[in-house]
Length: 182
Length: 172
Image (cartoon, rainbow over all chains, first blue to last red; front, side):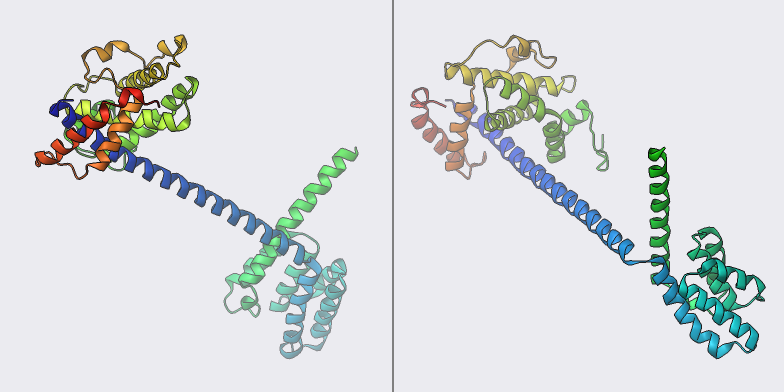
């Protein structure tokens, strides 16, 4: 083979080496994409499992009970009018027992107060009227001097939304089963 | 003409231009690799080849096309896809012929990117995969090779001539 052809072939080999490098790079990128994709899928599944776990852990009545227990202490220490205090204690008792309709009836008679806002939001949550419940929660969270303002933290919001989503799917499930039964 | 690094695609003309001035070679090779490899692989697999053969045929054909552009055998009016496909097919057919394993593939001769007329003015018509693999082997054994140092080219030439005499006896 002539020297010229050898030189030409060496140039082709140089290009071949460059192609090999690019090929390696493409393989690395592909592997990286695969790893990222697996990681993203695993993370999504993990999040989903966490959500399902939370959804199973959070029970509406248990959640309301926890919030009423926090409020009950405040009622005893702050509210001065004895009649109102007794009524609020009655509401708390009804909420603890899960009698949300009765609690709603008592609350109707009570004057406006921070305690009433808090109990009304919990009562409507128990009745699964999220729209009204949220109205009161928004009112509490926007008033920085509200007695229950600090109760609405990240944990509260997360649990509240989990209950809301779970309720939505429960309703959908009922609707779906109702239709198939027909 | 300037390169826009955020652009993922370059036109045929831009690729030829950048290769001819030896700039942004990696990016051009990357684009050519992504755009053409699957077609070559499909062709080789259809013609009794394996994945390894497809990879080798593709990289040798692509390196040759890049060299042809650098040496101005190919201008910016040419369709690089057609060159890569035609050279790859030619290289693989020569390899199959050497293995006495070639049957005529009509469907592939009518592929939109196959144009045998392109080969008329190109050097190294008698190439095959086996030849390339042997030369690559010789090249890697005689490294480093620089054009400024003619001794290294002479060394490779002598080494190549000793092994190339036995080339026809070997099989792929």
